[in-house]
Figure 1 (tube, rainbow, N blue to C red):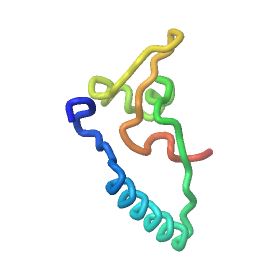
Figure 2: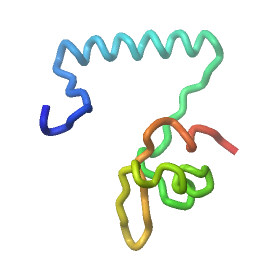
Figure 3: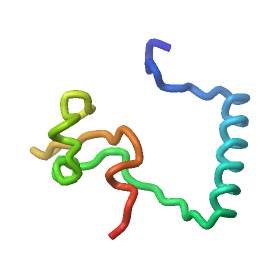
Length: 84
């Protein structure tokens, strides 16, 4: 679709399938002792600089400025998928 190139639009049957796959994924991960977390989709520049992503990937990251602060959308579950 032109509205979101590369991004899936899940219609009712597709959403059922997606949820079945997520349920299976959760079952397998729980069995193996993994704990699910959720992290923000958009993070400030300071974190991306700390991780090294800003210097290496800035030109290919989706960024915005809010209240004079740079933010970028995370492309995957790093660098914010860990806890201290």
